[in-house]
Image (tube, rainbow, N blue to C red; front, side, top):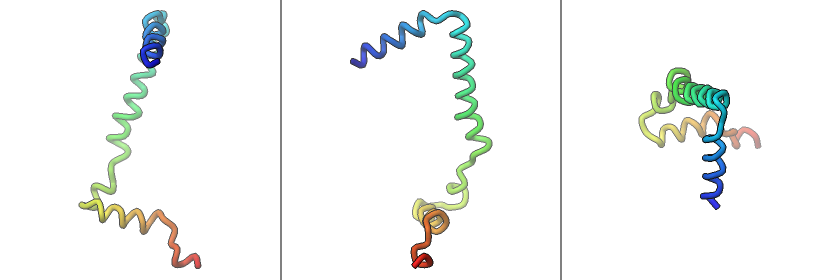
Length: 73
């Protein structure tokens, strides 16, 4: 089953026209920019910078993101 799926996509990409290959190259470059470059420069790992241990990170998330059950009753 997996082999049939692999050959389906393999044949499809192998038989692409020149324009189709250019479009896929553009798509792959854009994905690389979005996930690799932008993540590094615009989305730093703030929790790792502010806190040293996983326990401190968990406590911060619990205090700031989860609803406070004591005040709602």
